[in-house]
Image 1 (spheres, rainbow, N blue to C red):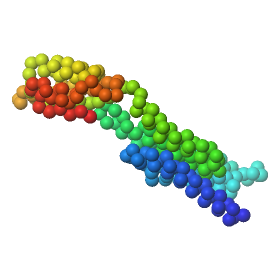
Image 2 (image 1 turned 90 degrees about the vertical axis):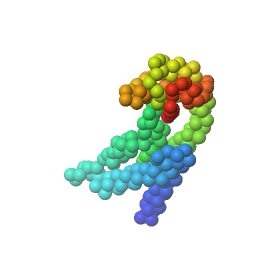
Image 3 (image 1 turned 135 degrees about the vertical axis):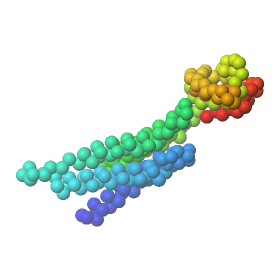
Image 4 (image 1 turned 180 degrees about the vertical axis):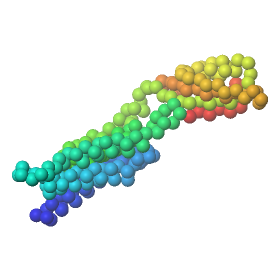
Length: 227
Protein backbone atom coordinates (compact mmCIF):
# COMPACT_ATOMS: atom_id res chain seq x y z
CA UNK A 1 0.00 0.00 0.00
CA UNK A 2 2.83 2.34 0.86
CA UNK A 3 4.48 1.79 -2.52
CA UNK A 4 1.23 2.67 -4.29
CA UNK A 5 0.92 5.86 -2.25
CA UNK A 6 4.56 6.75 -2.94
CA UNK A 7 4.14 6.12 -6.65
CA UNK A 8 1.08 8.35 -6.73
CA UNK A 9 2.96 11.08 -4.89
CA UNK A 10 5.88 10.89 -7.34
CA UNK A 11 3.43 11.04 -10.26
CA UNK A 12 1.84 14.17 -8.83
CA UNK A 13 5.14 15.92 -8.25
CA UNK A 14 6.61 15.02 -11.64
CA UNK A 15 3.48 15.99 -13.54
CA UNK A 16 3.24 19.33 -11.71
CA UNK A 17 6.90 20.02 -12.51
CA UNK A 18 6.54 19.18 -16.21
CA UNK A 19 3.34 21.16 -16.71
CA UNK A 20 4.62 24.19 -14.81
CA UNK A 21 7.93 24.10 -16.68
CA UNK A 22 6.11 23.91 -20.02
CA UNK A 23 4.42 27.26 -19.37
CA UNK A 24 7.63 28.73 -17.99
CA UNK A 25 9.50 27.69 -21.12
CA UNK A 26 7.49 30.14 -23.20
CA UNK A 27 8.26 32.96 -20.73
CA UNK A 28 11.95 32.01 -20.75
CA UNK A 29 12.14 32.23 -24.53
CA UNK A 30 10.76 35.76 -24.38
CA UNK A 31 13.31 36.83 -21.76
CA UNK A 32 10.88 37.39 -18.90
CA UNK A 33 12.14 37.53 -15.29
CA UNK A 34 10.10 34.53 -14.16
CA UNK A 35 10.92 31.77 -16.62
CA UNK A 36 11.44 28.05 -16.92
CA UNK A 37 12.82 27.27 -13.46
CA UNK A 38 10.56 29.72 -11.61
CA UNK A 39 7.34 28.27 -13.02
CA UNK A 40 8.57 24.73 -12.44
CA UNK A 41 9.35 25.47 -8.79
CA UNK A 42 6.05 27.31 -8.22
CA UNK A 43 4.02 24.44 -9.62
CA UNK A 44 6.12 21.85 -7.78
CA UNK A 45 5.86 23.71 -4.46
CA UNK A 46 2.12 24.19 -4.80
CA UNK A 47 1.72 20.49 -5.50
CA UNK A 48 3.73 19.56 -2.42
CA UNK A 49 1.66 21.90 -0.26
CA UNK A 50 -1.52 20.12 -1.30
CA UNK A 51 0.01 16.68 -0.79
CA UNK A 52 1.04 17.66 2.73
CA UNK A 53 -2.41 19.16 3.35
CA UNK A 54 -4.07 15.87 2.40
CA UNK A 55 -1.61 13.91 4.56
CA UNK A 56 -2.39 16.15 7.52
CA UNK A 57 -6.05 15.50 6.98
CA UNK A 58 -5.59 11.72 6.79
CA UNK A 59 -3.39 11.69 9.89
CA UNK A 60 -5.12 14.23 12.13
CA UNK A 61 -8.62 14.38 10.67
CA UNK A 62 -11.45 13.84 13.10
CA UNK A 63 -13.32 11.14 11.21
CA UNK A 64 -15.09 9.60 14.20
CA UNK A 65 -16.24 12.85 15.72
CA UNK A 66 -14.84 11.87 19.09
CA UNK A 67 -11.38 13.43 18.77
CA UNK A 68 -10.59 17.07 19.52
CA UNK A 69 -8.68 17.75 16.30
CA UNK A 70 -10.27 18.45 12.93
CA UNK A 71 -8.20 19.39 9.90
CA UNK A 72 -9.31 21.25 6.78
CA UNK A 73 -6.93 20.38 3.90
CA UNK A 74 -8.14 23.38 1.90
CA UNK A 75 -6.46 25.85 4.25
CA UNK A 76 -2.92 25.37 2.96
CA UNK A 77 -4.14 25.42 -0.64
CA UNK A 78 -5.89 28.71 0.11
CA UNK A 79 -2.64 30.18 1.40
CA UNK A 80 -0.94 29.22 -1.87
CA UNK A 81 -3.33 31.56 -3.68
CA UNK A 82 -2.35 34.44 -1.38
CA UNK A 83 1.37 33.70 -1.53
CA UNK A 84 1.49 33.52 -5.32
CA UNK A 85 -0.09 36.97 -5.43
CA UNK A 86 3.03 38.43 -3.81
CA UNK A 87 5.34 36.48 -6.11
CA UNK A 88 3.40 37.63 -9.16
CA UNK A 89 3.59 41.25 -8.01
CA UNK A 90 7.38 40.96 -7.98
CA UNK A 91 7.35 40.01 -11.67
CA UNK A 92 5.53 43.21 -12.69
CA UNK A 93 7.90 45.96 -13.78
CA UNK A 94 7.06 49.58 -14.52
CA UNK A 95 9.17 51.07 -17.29
CA UNK A 96 8.52 54.76 -17.93
CA UNK A 97 5.10 54.93 -19.60
CA UNK A 98 4.57 51.17 -19.85
CA UNK A 99 4.14 48.20 -17.54
CA UNK A 100 5.69 44.80 -18.19
CA UNK A 101 5.29 41.44 -16.50
CA UNK A 102 1.51 41.15 -16.22
CA UNK A 103 1.43 38.05 -18.41
CA UNK A 104 4.30 36.50 -16.47
CA UNK A 105 2.46 37.17 -13.20
CA UNK A 106 -0.64 35.52 -14.62
CA UNK A 107 1.48 32.55 -15.73
CA UNK A 108 2.79 32.14 -12.19
CA UNK A 109 -0.79 32.16 -10.93
CA UNK A 110 -1.78 29.46 -13.43
CA UNK A 111 1.33 27.41 -12.62
CA UNK A 112 0.38 27.44 -8.94
CA UNK A 113 -3.16 26.33 -9.79
CA UNK A 114 -1.76 23.50 -11.91
CA UNK A 115 0.42 22.41 -9.00
CA UNK A 116 -2.54 22.46 -6.63
CA UNK A 117 -4.60 20.39 -9.08
CA UNK A 118 -1.81 17.82 -9.43
CA UNK A 119 -1.43 17.67 -5.66
CA UNK A 120 -5.13 16.95 -5.33
CA UNK A 121 -4.90 14.21 -7.95
CA UNK A 122 -6.94 16.12 -10.55
CA UNK A 123 -4.70 15.29 -13.49
CA UNK A 124 -7.14 15.87 -16.34
CA UNK A 125 -7.93 19.52 -15.42
CA UNK A 126 -4.21 20.17 -14.83
CA UNK A 127 -3.27 18.87 -18.29
CA UNK A 128 -6.18 20.69 -19.95
CA UNK A 129 -5.30 24.01 -18.32
CA UNK A 130 -1.66 23.59 -19.34
CA UNK A 131 -2.66 22.97 -22.95
CA UNK A 132 -4.97 25.99 -22.97
CA UNK A 133 -2.41 28.27 -21.29
CA UNK A 134 0.49 27.16 -23.47
CA UNK A 135 -1.57 27.44 -26.65
CA UNK A 136 -2.81 30.92 -25.73
CA UNK A 137 0.73 32.12 -25.02
CA UNK A 138 1.94 30.89 -28.40
CA UNK A 139 -1.03 31.63 -30.64
CA UNK A 140 -2.53 34.77 -29.13
CA UNK A 141 0.89 36.45 -29.20
CA UNK A 142 0.69 36.43 -33.00
CA UNK A 143 -2.85 37.79 -32.88
CA UNK A 144 -1.79 40.61 -30.55
CA UNK A 145 1.02 41.61 -32.90
CA UNK A 146 -1.51 42.12 -35.72
CA UNK A 147 -3.95 44.19 -33.68
CA UNK A 148 -4.05 47.96 -33.94
CA UNK A 149 -3.76 49.06 -30.36
CA UNK A 150 -2.44 51.91 -28.29
CA UNK A 151 1.27 51.93 -27.60
CA UNK A 152 3.11 54.21 -25.22
CA UNK A 153 6.53 55.77 -25.18
CA UNK A 154 8.57 58.19 -23.09
CA UNK A 155 10.53 60.86 -24.93
CA UNK A 156 13.31 63.00 -23.41
CA UNK A 157 14.87 65.90 -25.31
CA UNK A 158 17.82 68.09 -24.35
CA UNK A 159 18.02 71.40 -26.19
CA UNK A 160 19.23 74.99 -26.13
CA UNK A 161 16.73 77.29 -24.44
CA UNK A 162 15.42 79.00 -27.57
CA UNK A 163 12.22 81.00 -27.77
CA UNK A 164 9.30 78.80 -28.85
CA UNK A 165 11.42 75.64 -28.71
CA UNK A 166 8.86 73.62 -26.75
CA UNK A 167 6.16 74.41 -29.29
CA UNK A 168 8.40 73.39 -32.19
CA UNK A 169 9.21 70.09 -30.50
CA UNK A 170 5.55 69.37 -29.83
CA UNK A 171 4.66 70.08 -33.43
CA UNK A 172 7.42 67.77 -34.69
CA UNK A 173 6.27 64.94 -32.44
CA UNK A 174 2.62 65.31 -33.43
CA UNK A 175 3.61 65.29 -37.12
CA UNK A 176 4.56 61.61 -36.62
CA UNK A 177 0.96 60.75 -35.60
CA UNK A 178 1.91 60.64 -31.93
CA UNK A 179 -0.50 61.95 -29.29
CA UNK A 180 1.17 63.78 -26.41
CA UNK A 181 -0.28 62.99 -22.99
CA UNK A 182 2.03 64.70 -20.49
CA UNK A 183 4.91 67.13 -20.69
CA UNK A 184 7.49 68.21 -18.12
CA UNK A 185 10.00 71.04 -18.60
CA UNK A 186 13.30 71.47 -16.78
CA UNK A 187 15.34 74.66 -17.35
CA UNK A 188 19.01 75.27 -16.64
CA UNK A 189 19.29 79.05 -16.43
CA UNK A 190 23.08 79.15 -16.19
CA UNK A 191 23.68 76.93 -19.21
CA UNK A 192 20.62 78.32 -21.03
CA UNK A 193 19.38 74.83 -21.82
CA UNK A 194 16.14 72.94 -21.32
CA UNK A 195 15.03 69.34 -20.98
CA UNK A 196 11.61 68.31 -22.24
CA UNK A 197 10.05 65.04 -21.06
CA UNK A 198 6.98 63.71 -22.84
CA UNK A 199 4.68 60.76 -22.31
CA UNK A 200 3.05 59.92 -25.62
CA UNK A 201 0.70 57.45 -27.24
CA UNK A 202 0.21 56.19 -30.78
CA UNK A 203 -2.24 53.63 -32.13
CA UNK A 204 -0.62 52.31 -35.29
CA UNK A 205 1.79 49.46 -35.81
CA UNK A 206 4.40 51.86 -37.17
CA UNK A 207 5.09 55.53 -36.56
CA UNK A 208 4.36 57.84 -39.49
CA UNK A 209 8.01 58.98 -39.46
CA UNK A 210 11.30 58.42 -37.66
CA UNK A 211 10.47 60.22 -34.44
CA UNK A 212 14.02 60.49 -33.11
CA UNK A 213 15.35 61.75 -36.46
CA UNK A 214 12.51 64.25 -36.84
CA UNK A 215 13.08 65.78 -33.41
CA UNK A 216 16.88 65.73 -33.79
CA UNK A 217 16.61 67.90 -36.93
CA UNK A 218 15.13 70.79 -34.93
CA UNK A 219 17.58 73.62 -34.43
CA UNK A 220 19.05 73.68 -30.93
CA UNK A 221 18.28 70.04 -30.07
CA UNK A 222 21.35 68.35 -28.59
CA UNK A 223 20.15 64.94 -27.51
CA UNK A 224 17.07 62.71 -27.91
CA UNK A 225 16.10 59.56 -26.03
CA UNK A 226 13.04 57.37 -26.58
CA UNK A 227 12.00 54.63 -24.14
